[in-house]
Image (spheres, rainbow, N blue to C red):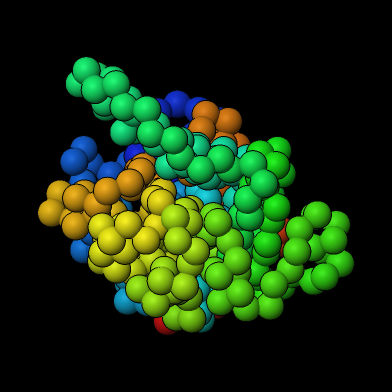
Length: 335
């Protein structure tokens, strides 16, 4: 029997299929103590070490090389498809399997993308606030139909977004190093070869790519200035993709019609963040991949990945790095 730590907030001390899967395999489910902030590095490090955790059903906890090496972890199962908070090379070196949950939350993220787009383009938040204050403002905003949406990242989530953008009668441009002309033709979009071309041609720019050394601050002040006047920026990827201070400045200048953010460089967003003063900005609490169906499906798949790895089997379809070798972890712990 192994101890498995479950950190996603909405699963805390809750029954569900994920728990039945873990406990049915004979493992002990451990939750952080009430009030513990597992997004703090020292907190997650302490919990992993003190409880001798071998598997973690993880949110976005910072799991760097030092934390991973000090722990007893054999598997990190992300409830989601992003994994930038985990040091993947270190995990592979240490023989720790890192898994994600493909196919469980793409529709949820795509719907949240649509929600943010419509909230910005139709001024939903401002108009609701006006009505509640007795202000009967009726300012016309640009129609979406017939405009161009540019997606940076055309993976599983991007492809789910494309279907919905077509439903809004938008033309779609796609930038993704893995996207081929044949893929683009099948999806009914146009492939562009550079981010710059996408920025200058799109009325809506929507981010659906990982944050890495090459994509951090991909959308900086210069990139925003290259976007069309009154364009809309959406970030459903990772907070580090957008220079947040620059975004505030550009929104205050009126160059962009507005922006929608589901993710931030620091989460939870601090109450002194300049984003809170930005006009025409709609924000949400990193909820893109969380609806009822996605939560059940993703947590269940993550739990099955944990059970498989702890039984000595690698869930290949969910592995981030298929070069990982579980025997390395055993050898390291025995030495």
